[in-house]
Structure formats: C-alpha cells, structure tokens
Amino acid sequence: MTSETLGFFEKVYEVAKQIPYGRVTSYGAIAKYLGAARSARIVGYAMNNSHTKEVPAHRVVNRKGLLTGKHHFEGTNLMQQLLESEGIEVIENQIQNFETLFWDPSKEL
Image (cartoon, rainbow, N blue to C red; front, side, top):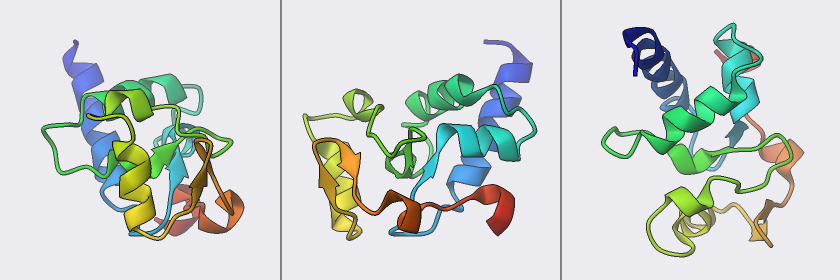
C-alpha cells in the first residue's frame, strides 16, 4: 500500500470514529465528505483494514443500507449483532429506517 493510500485510510478512520452510537453512514458518504466522491470502494477497503483501530466499522454500510461488509467481521452475524446492540433493527441484512438513522458527515461535521 502506498503512503497516500494509508493517509486516506487514516482520514476515513477519523470520520468513522465520529459516527454517533445508534446511527449509520455509507462508504460513499464518507468518500464524498473527504472530497473523493468516486472512492466509496476505497473507503470499504479502509473499513476492512480497520480491525486494529478503534473504528466502529459496523456503522458503515452501502448506500442502500445493506450490510455488504458483514463477511469481514468475525463470526457469522457480528456486524448485525453490533448494530442491534445499538438499537438498530436489521432484517435480511437490510437496516430498517435507514433514512432516519443515516448520518451524513457532509452535514454533521
């Protein structure tokens, strides 16, 4: 990984650390906030590599509220369990009331 990529990952982690308990955001919303609107996939890669950091990666989902990154969490349902422990309802990998729970860093930070 290049130092430029690692620097971007650190910026992603700083945004993700600010997602409030019981709220979620998307890979694309973080990318847009960081001025890299077309880099949602890179934000996803950053979340995959965040296991050694204190990053609430379970709060970052795809633009439709789907738990597309759940296979990167240990166990079969850890991502969903973490979200549900924060009061977020998940049915068939889909966050319920996604629009209400959505946290947009471009508006909140």
